[in-house]
Image 1 (cartoon, rainbow, N blue to C red):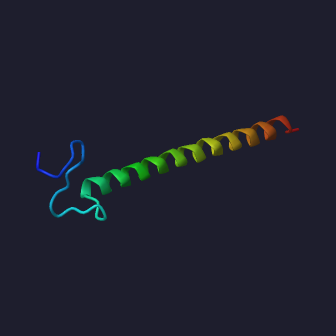
Image 2 (tube, rainbow, N blue to C red):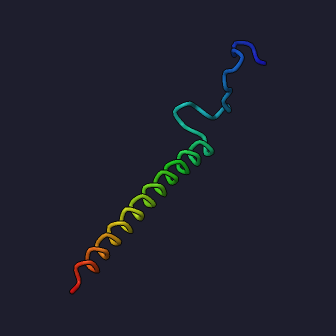
Length: 64
């Protein structure tokens, strides 16, 4: 271990600074963001299916 670096501290590549995340970090951040959007789309889709189902039940029960 190089001198001056405490144990457990992550070492960075020479051209990598804390302000400029690596390509892997950017990829993981984008993947996490996309994963969150997928859950939101799924939630809206399931909510919409229930609204349509309730409207259909209402229409069928009130049909003459």
